[in-house]
Image 1 (tube, rainbow, N blue to C red):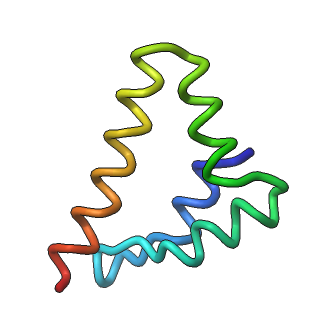
Image 2 (image 1 turned 90 degrees about the vertical axis):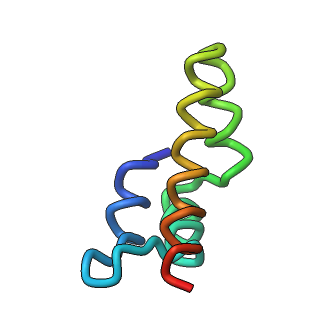
Length: 67
């Protein structure tokens, strides 16, 4: 699972957005899924869950601001 690689691949610096489809595709290509990413962060305890929620929120807010 390579969340950093997926985020880097999906981020468009010119538009300051994250393409969710690209993020999911890169995760899938690495043999992972959002469920597995969440489970891995969840296993890290409250800090992992907070980090996952922060990343998710940032991605969604970035895309909403574009609209």
